[in-house]
Length: 193
Image (cartoon, rainbow, N blue to C red; front, side):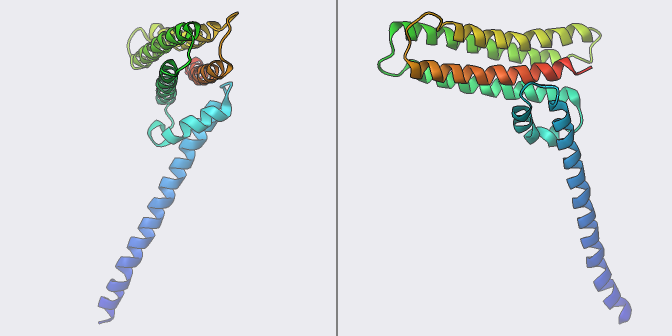
């Protein structure tokens, strides 16, 4: 009878101990992955934005720098797509002048170019295991850098033109976000190897 009571008590106790042990291991791993991202983000210009946007990817990135760069590019793609939606919405507003409509149209094209280039950068990152690793890395850097140029091109469209301040502010804010995200992705790529 004592043996059966012992077995009835020990088995659940061992299960609880095992569960707690596994939980602590998972927590320690997640903390290590988060710390990896925080450390890597220190090379970027916009450290807090880098951490805020990439820490949610910690469990999939783990401690893989290439995966972190791809995640940064993916975050930038999402940001560019959100910007595209914002700018497209502006185009449909009443009271937009012809000049504003022209600037918005150009910005929409710039953002489309940025999304395309970001996808090309992700593709190049996927070929870093190929024989032409340096060429692929250079391509990823070039494409990520081009995104910043696209955002600048959009905001340059306002130069010397009379534009509704609200329209200008919304577009400048959206483009600044793309620029910051792309800058962070580029910094991570530049420090990859």
